[in-house]
Image 1 (cartoon, rainbow, N blue to C red):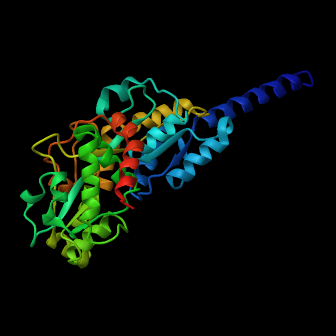
Image 2: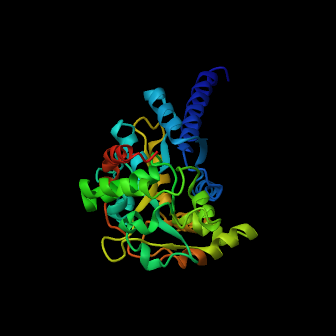
Amino acid sequence: MPRLLPALTLMTALLGGLSAASAQEQVLNLYTARHYQTDEALYTNFTKLTGIRINRIEGKEDELFERIRREGAASPADVFLTVDAARLQVADDAGLFAPVHSRTLNSRIPEQFRDPEGHWFGFSYRARVIAYDRAKVKPEEIASWADLTKPRFKGKICVRSGGHVYNRTLVASLLYHWGEDRTADWARGIVANLARDPKGGDTDQMRAVAAGECEVAITNHYYYTRLMLSNKPEDQEVVRKVGIVYPEQNTFGTHVNISGGGMLKHAPNKAAAVRFLEYLASDEAQAYFANGNNEWPVVPGVKLNNPALESMSNFKVDRLSASILAKNTPKAQRFIDRAGWK
């Protein structure tokens, strides 16, 4: 019996090491700047399907970005999720992402919504639209972004800060389609037609339209969808008074942006990271984005169970690559600053 002890000790050590390795493979460390309660269903279901437990760190984009940079090669983070192509590109330019070579991701996610090198992928998209006072504005008066700069809307526009990434990427898209001179004139025209100093979020802009503070506003579509789905009388009143228009339907299509993410360069659980990203491109996860947060799936043909969102889905999408859009964004900020859009 004593002769067996060394062998048993060795076997126990080996089994312990295998157990530790096995446990390591069953963990995904996620850093996310998406703050939507409905995403809980995504994480829970991924764990049920794969057995991989998600350790989640939530925070603002800049905070998480700096944390990943500061942690360097010792970072436990496997995947970084955020909203807006520009924020994904900032992380990519800093060398935070590793390329992911996945047939699943490349086949399911259209080229428009992913980085050509496989550094990041979009999983849902949202449209930048024009909200208007139904009693005072006709939809045909705001068919183009250019219409907002006409004398007709002097002192009648509400919008959030020009420094917000939603507006930076909008201007980046206009730079691509219109060129520098026209885009510079447009940004100055928006500032000249403001009803008040930029403040608040997108929902605040629509509430201001409903309250008569302005006649038109710039917002993301899903904030309007949330109001449509709300049971609060005050939200239903906003929907009754305010409509939305998808601009540029007769030209290049309405500007859209993405939520997405990628695998980090120093990810300790790379196999789990790829599996998670592939899961986000599955029909099930894509439906969660639509039904839970009123964003459109990037994967074509995914069935929705969101009548409010479906009622808003028939529009021409700008086909500008999210990668090109993201790379134009720093330049867009300079145009915003020069126009005095604070």
